[in-house]
Length: 425
Image (cartoon, helix red, strand yellow):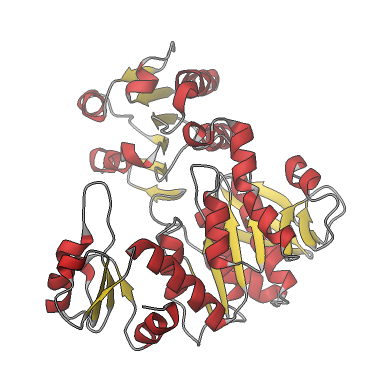
């Protein structure tokens, strides 16, 4: 089936679904395959639950005119998304980076939605499946799209750019994330810069942090750029005025008081302000959007209980974000501070060294107690309290709870450190 014909089918459905547990009436089901699953086996179930059509790539499951056979369902999904993006012909802003992608995406969307009808990546659906689903969630009512792009190997961002063909782009930063897949920090820089390469090669606009030496160097000879800074000449000036604990910035002599903690969120806020300014969103509307944004999903959340103030940042972690969180936590004026850190994943051969560095940083501050959880931290030579897994930590922690104070909880998603809340409540 030609992509134009598949697109006409798509336009008459309620949207794309890839999970039979989430089937909606009149949806278009794509039978994707992975190492441990084969969506083709569930095509009939999807149709019985109300799907209008099921896109399959194995002939034995082609049972009726409601099953549409293609050579590869994933490639068909990506091609359909790319075709639909061109069909809509709306501005697309893409963003990637090692840290802060999702928060920045949410802030940008909040700001732009004050003036435009926008659609942004839901959650962190930012990979080779999530980006197509994001694009296919947009309809002709959408005036502007914000697409988050994630990657842990070279050439992934390039592929996502070829699907989404962004008109604008922003890289949050280059940090020590997914070192195993990228092969080191230089690989991270090269991989994330694939967004720059796409925009430059297609003469599109780049948003950038003029205080980031790497970004500044890479864009030195490129003209279609629009940047922010706190210290140097730039298109937009945004100053960090406070981060104790919530980030406050100054923009056009207006104080913008966010509900985000950590000085590291300054650049995320500044990027949203800059993009809002570029698209002529009124200053007061930018301020309203940022001040109203409330983080969720275990990202830099402040939770207050009778005994504790908890800073929950358990959605993800890498050496760069871990270091920034500890620096920020140390700068808070709170008394009786406790740190609970979980392993950082996907660091490859550098895992032992990076966990040792973070353990040294954490115990080097004047925190009352430092708890380290996971097999990597367990191997560190440290004065912190070490536990091989969560169950061992929980057993000890339940009998030795802090009597009061502020607690920082941070670790990779796979550690699921939000479970600690059950102990503290």
